[in-house]
Length: 129
Image (cartoon, rainbow, N blue to C red; front, side, top):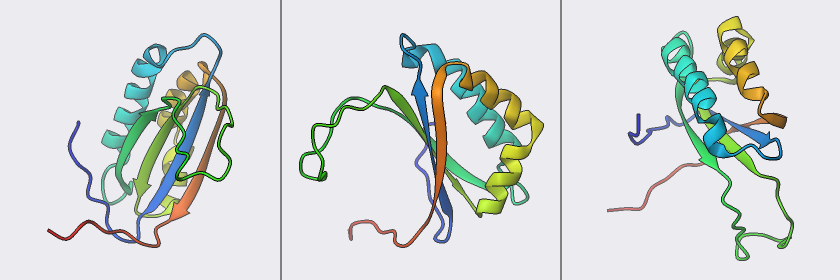
């Protein structure tokens, strides 16, 4: 559950932002996120499904002045879900499945907005040891 990920070169990354409704805390959505992530891992995590791994992050309010051009913008409370897939097609097929849609809809009840954007990997690396 909390193991490091090894992402194969050529994988695609999907970045999903879940903007929480006012008054909804991260703790309020943990069960729904856990159920949805468990479905993805256990249903689509094979060669046919194409799921490689994922991570869930909560917004903590800090913004890097060193890594940002537009500092001072306020951001709504949100959660980011980062998933890695063998291909964008694998991702889309999994998310069109009724099992996933049911879990995502339950999570959506806590949100004012969600969006998911995809990226193709251009580079990856680690420090030399």
